[in-house]
Image (spheres, rainbow, N blue to C red):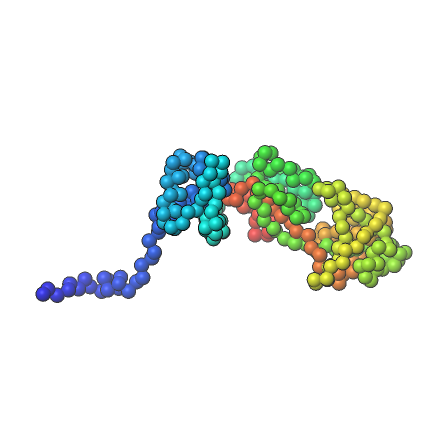
Length: 315
């Protein structure tokens, strides 16, 4: 009987190196089709998104269902909906695909130059805090980038109006936009020295009801924002009252500086108004925060939007 042939040390070394898993040629295209159909609830609409025919999408789904050995969709005359197994499958893979998309986008934009016109809509406070003092920090590193900055109180239709992004303070309303929280800033309570000398300094949130307050109108609801004081997990809402109501924070600062009442500005802007000599009060009850969000019309933004994100986050 013939002896085994020794192929040498290279072959023996290869035997010791574990092989990488072979990619499943059914899963990759099938998952793309699966996610598209789950979002569109239609093979026809999913095909338009993927650039495939309806039959091409159907074949990809059929091969995937054969591969995972469960039925993923319930097909009816009116719609295509996920089965219970399909829903669980979707819940597992959707976050993974989002991470893959993000990794691919980071790789694609790592060396890309920010060029062209960047169209951004921001609220007035964002304009004052981020853009007025630091506009050169956005455009300076990108000589081929131009900026169209629209300042307004409402979000509007980013997609219909052709905006690349929006930046706004406050909780995001329900929408199909991609939303990313950039930061939280504390809500501070303050008043002028003259007001405190005249009316006294409150030592507990409930004493605010005995004082004049500068109220801030929420542009979305048209009503003044509620006053809330927070210390750790303890939260005390207060029925604030006053003779002055504004919808723009610079007017609120002006009213507080004139001694017309107690105000609740955001700390991120308060730090820029040290010229007004406003005195913080109830500092032990200042754990309430207010968020800043970036809104995008799509998940994988171009390099010019990545430049905006780096500018806003200090990256």
